[in-house]
Length: 116
Image (cartoon, rainbow, N blue to C red; front, side, top):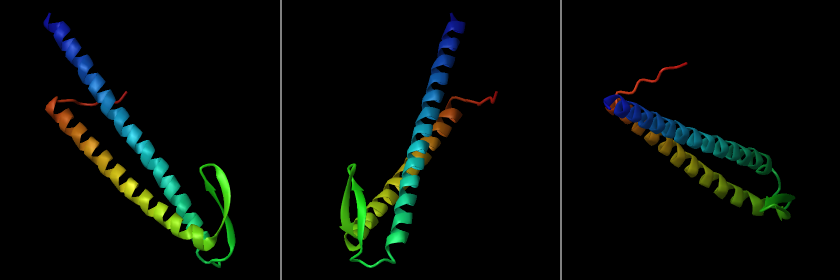
């Protein structure tokens, strides 16, 4: 009977560990996606800023390519870029928090990860 209990407990711990790892992996994927999008915004801003404000440019909005001027597009891109930085900061905090939570859980349950 006690062996069944310990085996059940081991399965529960393994499941919790897997949930922690999957959660961290999902947050890391989101961080990567946001970093890529932020880098794209940065490159576009670097390209547009030296240009004349009256020069026409095209911007994709919800899948529709629209014609605008540089002076119309640059402020919107800067706003989006700042928003992406904020999202990135929040995701990094969330990742670190989840990682600390996992480390506390591992210590509490005396978990040692064995690499195979």
